[in-house]
Image 1 (tube, rainbow, N blue to C red):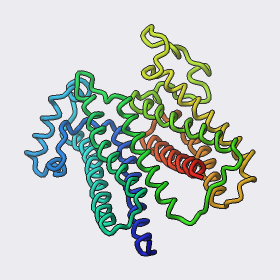
Image 2 (cartoon, helix red, strand yellow):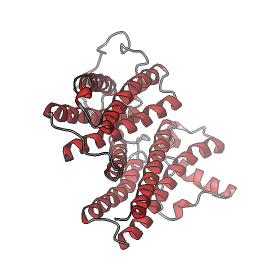
Image 3 (cartoon, helix red, strand yellow):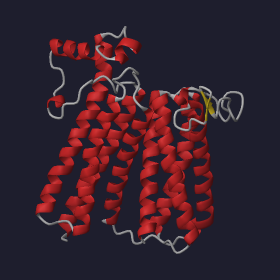
Image 4 (cartoon, one colour):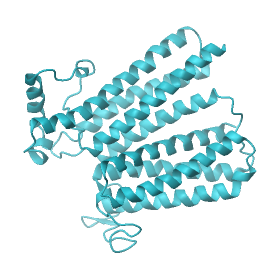
Length: 339
């Protein structure tokens, strides 16, 4: 493959990573500002045009008034307040359409020019499938809050977030494969196995982070390191007299999210102390150092998110760092598995 062709693909991949990260940021802010249910229908093409006149705004607002979020939570909302939440959700959906264009048009051009190997072509077709599915998953998530209960399903929210992060991670990995950084060392099997365990911990931390956001569980305890008056809170394993509730008990979800963060910190600290000096590939060493740094920063920010009662700006920063941590961790895992 010619250098110019490789450069064009790298620019394309960087552009995709940038706008997908922006999409995740806007999606997180849409959730944090409780704006996700402001658009009550899904129109792939017509929905790209926002309200342009006072009459259009009144029509969209009247549509919103027909659903439980307005009737139960926002019955006193003004039109200007509605516009605020509408623009967040609108921006999120428009970014999704822009990502589709930025992916599909160059992909078709590069494929017709035979810039991809057979393996790469299959990888990008898989990405196309994931991207298309993500749009449907997003609407499936929104639909859950347009029923009797005016709250988006936290489980569907978690699916939507983790798929977005998987897409971003896969693109980042494809970009890394085009860089001259050499093979990552995996000769010491303990490093590979422990790091994959760490990656799984990060995966579940993201899942439970989404559960936290969907259930507003971060607002249930605004103390650290204790949760309220103790390290192990009451009602940890019971919800409405039901035992456990791993997926819907906000107390357990908050506790488990913290526990996963502590486990990830201990695991990556162990890996750094034990194996960092043994790694000879400077890019791999830098990659691991970056992951260790992100874990430290994420824990620090996470504490202040809790203490601030989930301030919107801090919550958004926490999600961005978590996304970057997931991406860098997944790419590292793929590199050591591949080699």
